[in-house]
Length: 491
Ligand SMILES: *Cc1c(COP(=O)(O)O)cnc(C)c1O
Image (cartoon, rainbow, N blue to C red):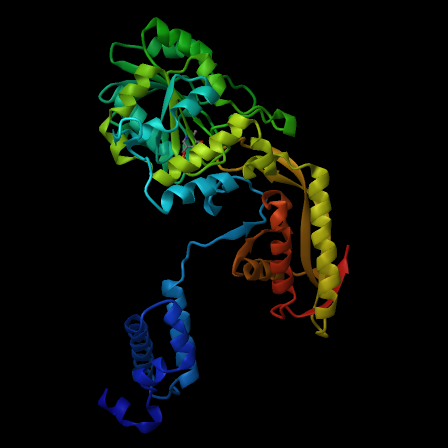
């Protein structure tokens, strides 16, 4: 060690010299000097360790160390959670944050977030109120249920419903509905954690009302239906209709719990999709408690909504888990504003998720073509590299999946912008992958699909007001010189 520092040729720039560099000083917008000095010391220490291990290595220059400090600071302190554009066409993409919020939802959330609010304050009485009171009327009027309560997400909703109604007893579920929703959410595990004994009835593909009837015992606490929201069964299949389950349950004075998942309040069939069960239908059919997500087809912030009859909701509301899973003021404000769009009847015009579902194939074709034309004409000037790649830009028909545990297997027709990179008369798949990586690293990023040696960007999950921003990312990344282009061809 002594030898390393003693050799002047192997001297490293001092931490003091590095933090005085203008590029390092510019990090002041991210962090205070002492945090920056810590990173500088770490960078110098790791350079010293490299030199100690390799006597022949050349010491890194001042400029190299400055770059390392800046990169390390960005990596540590810039938010890794940041906005991006979704060119995958998957509308409810859990990895990409599910439903985008509507303008009024956002405004309502900001309004209660920046100051104090009536969160648990009864204005009429001038004293403590309940946070559970804020959505009651809207949930009643929109779903027909007697009352409702909201927790952090639908997984939490199911846990609290089971714990409140069935802890220490049995819940009957069709074997075909003992599913995994994703992200580690498995119905049998949830049952166990809620202190409930799962009684599976029927077979994977068929469960009849007689199967439920035969399983009811004095230990039974409820019948549960789970919407198989992320897969489809075809062929010799039969699931018992909810109304039949309710009739049977009522004969035994038992509740039916319905885990709906997507929280659909509007008929999707006008958009060419198969029927998704509506919350109103489950209320109509007589389910005692119905739970669904706030950020799937409902189009609001992350939440788990529970609606049902007065006494079941009262039981849930007074359970201690509701306290542990309670939602904050921003979620309540965002949900109220989101539900208000349904109340006014203009959800399809204003809620992003419904605008995307309702976008016509013609409008999507026009937008994809506009991207393609703009890219082809503007990139033509960037194609200066002899021996570079040929970029082929086109538009082709495709399909957008709904995703996110709603309408499994259902696709909406769309038009896709396609980019492929050619050399010697063949598309080079590696470059489609490289191009996709360049796009997702942009700030903000753009996530696209890569298939069959081509890159696909679907306008369906992009709101038209964001078209220009998406085009700007495409232009910047495809024409920025990271990919050497020889020519551009519109096909
Ligand atoms: C998505 C889904 C859940 C989980 O909801 P989260 O809001 O993600 O917690 C539970 N059940 C069903 C049927 C679902 O589709």
